[in-house]
Amino acid sequence: MPTQRRIERHQLPYYLKVFNRITDKPMGYIGNISQEGLMLISPWPMLVLAEFDMRLKIPGRDGQQQYIDFSATCRWTREDVTPGSFDSGFELTDPPVGYLELVEVLRQYFTFHPNAASA
Image 1 (tube, rainbow, N blue to C red):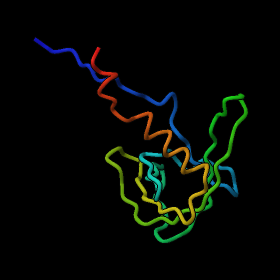
Image 2 (tube, one colour; image 1 turned 180 degrees about the vertical axis):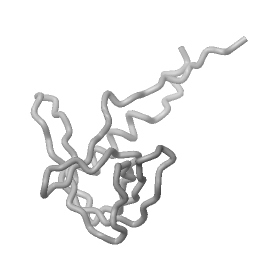
Image 3 (cartoon, helix red, strand yellow; image 1 turned 180 degrees about the horizontal axis):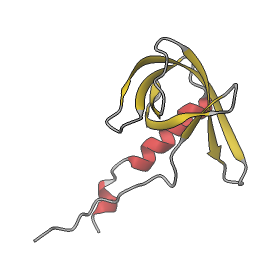
Image 4 (cartoon, helix red, strand yellow; image 1 turned 90 degrees about the vertical axis):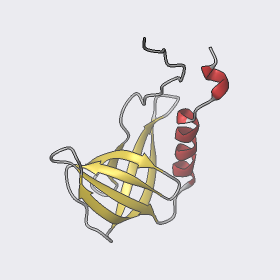
């Protein structure tokens, strides 16, 4: 007999797309994120050791789009298990406050809260 899960699952309402800040062209989607960097899932391999000017477009509470601009250096790239996709690891040069706040919001959103699961 299967047991019912008591852990609340969290899903993002959409993928966090990363854009090239200079051209405004999409680069890919965030696979994971930390204060020091991120993993980008992209249809292209990224040039290792190159610095990229990136932008996240985040919907604001007032309906206006907010931008988080930052620079990051590609440290590695490899083919993803999904055909036609590549994973690339980026280290942020100097993470802006908006980026660090986003990481914290996402961390809190996906953190397991034992009291919430005791229903």
